[in-house]
Length: 208
Image 1 (cartoon, rainbow, N blue to C red):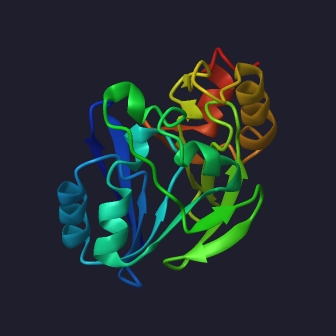
Image 2: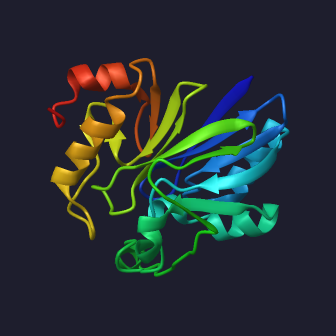
């Protein structure tokens, strides 16, 4: 049995997720935006052991607590290989715009379509450039869920006016890679409420 917990953290109100496999008592942290102490409380409440951090992309408001949590739990950070430069640039990851100016490195860089397993979950990495060059959605086919980061929102899509962004790429990737997934797939975005592939195919005005 799986369990999802979410906290809205950081100055941009980012969704930070903890996805737990109760059977194994293991969990995955998705987009640790900020407040490592709050995320640690989520972990403690789950009574599960963190095994990895997944990053949907490298903007500062999704990675603020990465290094503290990686050190605390001795776990690896997974991100798209195309996001390496952005993660390591305060300008591209936007942290310098907010007077923070920090960078991180991932431990595992994933390619489009790569399949792997964490906490007993089968996961497929889907590269969806557009919001950033290395935007990535994490699809859990057996659970029919996907973490979409700032690629796909409820009846909306991510901004494309930041460094490495492209609206044409964003729309194309959503249409060609996400909208072909089963309609019942529940999407958990980086900001705002959850949605589904079925709903977005019917009501998202940006993807046509």
